[in-house]
Image (cartoon, protein in one colour):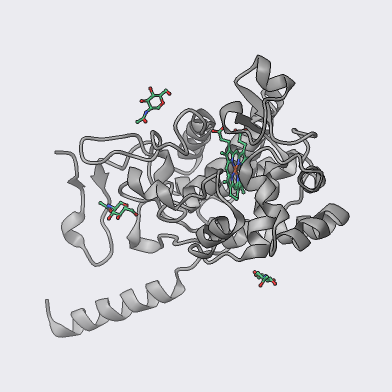
Length: 312
Ligand code: HEM
Ligand SMILES: *[C@@H]1O[C@H](CO)[C@@H](O)[C@H](O)[C@H]1NC(C)=O
Ligand SMILES: *[C@@H]1O[C@H](CO)[C@@H](O)[C@H](O)[C@H]1NC(C)=O
Ligand SMILES: *[C@@H]1O[C@H](CO)[C@@H](O)[C@H](O)[C@H]1NC(C)=O
């Protein structure tokens, strides 16, 4: 390659890497209607099963805390890696994969190969909160999807049996602070958990079934979670753990002031959505969220990948 061409290529790469960061307008030109394609499907799914809001919100959290918000959580196992789905925090409890598949199919029909699975998860989380009566926010977009997943990496997720120091350490590893920890734990205002994980003796519901609601108003996104925690009724050990300093004061503030909870929750969701995102050529836009693309598109600066099959 002539040296002038090399220089131009280098400058172009530098320029592109400088402009790639998450923005709310990322798909403005390439898939302008994506939000209105996604929303009705989430709405219907939640109408059919209100718990789905909780399950979709949790998917984004479990994606972001494990090697970043890169949709690695959605990958099925392959011959080259064992994915995250069968790891203990996910096995038998992570749900909503079929809804993600449905939305991905709709988006592939409208704007093929444009919208990443990682961005879909971020939008689904927001829509689920809104449809449960919680606050809305502008979702930052432009994440790319990973080329692999790693079962062991799920040990960066917080453990429900641990105390506040341990939870905080897990959050600090992700660049999140104690305000974020307490605000994001408020996601347990919706959804269910397995009774085997419940702190304390079995309640009536747990005597009769496998799962129970985490909160007393389980399909409404509100600040009831904090009132429950203060009353000693946190479902998981990790919910009860927020009664200890430095989390306690924040729990009390959110129990008193729902709007403050909503404000801090939305701020923390945007922060969580920015954990170790793959940008530009660092990742791809998967055509099926469950597997990496078989044929890699031409990537800038790596023409050798044009039309190459990764299948072996
Ligand atoms: C603070 C650390 C956290 C721990 C230890 C924790 C742990 C858990 C556990 C053990 C379950 C029940 C899973 C099962 O039944 O096996 C659960 C459910 C849930 N978690 Fe968390 N979680 C935490 C933070 C979060 C965050 C940050 C979010 C989202 C922003 C979240 C959203 C949810 C939701 C919505 C459910 C209910 C899911 C459903 O009904 O399908 N959690 N969590
Ligand atoms: C997932 O859970 C099922 C049922 O409890 C169990 O049979 C299976 O071995 C678990 N998978 C892994 C990989 O831990
Ligand atoms: C998988 O994750 C573990 C724990 O984070 C890490 O030590 C290991 O290097 C990762 N493996 C690969 C192949 O990336
Ligand atoms: C946590 O970070 C947010 C900014 O994202 C900030 O507003 C908040 O004060 C921080 N909390 C603490 C305890 O430092």
